[in-house]
Length: 481
Image (cartoon, rainbow, N blue to C red; front, top):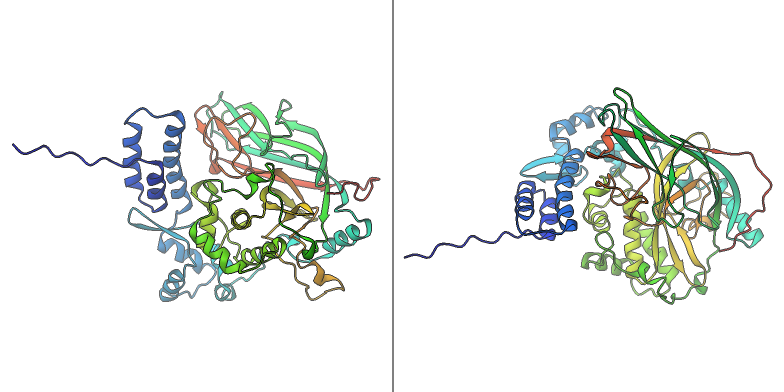
């Protein structure tokens, strides 16, 4: 009698399922998730991780919502005479981010606008050419000069304090939550950071009852609850004041030495799964950039310059990416958080402590946006800021004496037009969220849920407004770092 064939055991390991989702094999991933959830007893963490992979696929579907015809139609709004052959050439060169999902070619919803960031040829062909809405501080200006002058004159690294009042709001769409149910909301809130942002004072909120997370919370929030009303949006807001400082460190590369890695610094030279991993492609890229350089500051300059060359482009939602630094290295473009995590990974790989910051930026005249940047540790200077997205500053048409010295401003300096909510990525809220976060990495827009689950970005909106208050007597840089 022939032996009964034994069914092959299905590999339902988390790594395999993540890889299937990354590869666009959603049906196979669903099969493995079902098998794992219906199989042997699972821990609560393992079950939640499997369920999140199902949610990740849903979010990827939302991000990759265009087919080829829809993408062409969007591009032709700006380039009416775009030919199919030209489209195919640009597509073959990777200018339109896409995924093959279960055999169907799908394009990223921001690919039409990203094209003009990634291709000078395409940008030159736009029917209605317009400058990009970049942050004013990305261009060398008088604010940078004033910061450097004040720091050198006072021999202090934190200078030009300014008192700012900020209002942040979050509005849940009407009927996104059934009437009578409690809506739970977390709005980002600033952390006290000596020499960077201080004297944080709550002013007002809607609703009045609120809970501000402890100052030690690495991703700090103010928490609210409100009952949903039928046919009405559910609104939350908070107003606060704080004092912001600009920073500038006049770094002499010849004085920089390798840092002694103390227990406090050790986490900042280590890998941290899944987004900061020292893969072989990352090591190869690092060796190509660093060469035989051994001075930590000059290594940092080389890595900063290399990541600065990676063009900015609108990003996929971070929660859909299984390894952000690796994605940025291979995609050849990235937004501020993706560029920052790539630089953090490269610095740590070279023994230079590096860590995350993020929050919001603003400018005179009403400009505001969310933004990510970081810090690196340089002995003997200590922790200093870095913003690789703003990158190297180059003298423009109206250059002044001394502008050349500001080239590396954002590798050791920081403007005073930003507020930090987060001092790390992917950290717990206080109070903790029950359901999946919309952003599992960062927190600049906020988070919302009810007992029925998380509310994703298509179910609510957010806003940020900053006003610099009239100048008050203050010492110009009482904090030295």
